[in-house]
Image 1 (cartoon, one colour):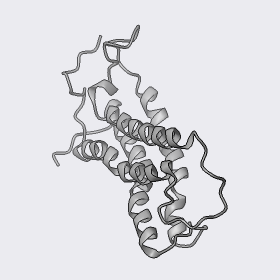
Image 2 (cartoon, helix red, strand yellow):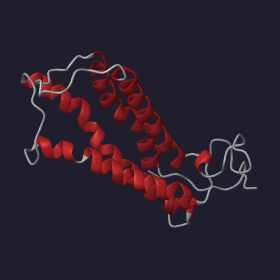
Image 3 (spheres, one colour):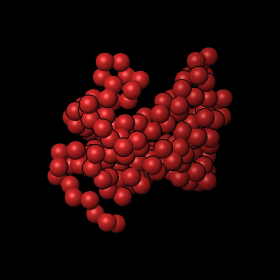
Image 4 (cartoon, helix red, strand yellow):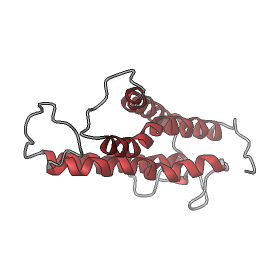
Length: 178
């Protein structure tokens, strides 16, 4: 059984990684908040493009999607925390055992790549490379970009944290003082 200090990690976490992991839930929060008015049929300035009327399941879906988004963003804290290196006591059979580095790195890298794919089109739409949404005026468009723009960083941040986790867990990292 591996002993790691409570709240600590086996090897020091780079300061930049710790700051990014703690900031990530706040990076995706504006995107989650942007979605919520849609749950009640408020179009946030979008020009009607002939979409079907809202169904009964739209409200719980939008709220659930926002909650799951934040929960997944919070999971990246495992890449900089002790519970990402040793299974917690409440996990049956595995409690107190070391988490194999690839058991955390593979899902983090795959998730980061999916997020880059999902949100990568947002800046492309801003620069006219792909089609953009139509808004009733520029203020709605600006608000949309302000709220959804930070989500484009989610994938790259997750990938950077996965690489830092892998390097730290496999001895390829020397802690910097900054």
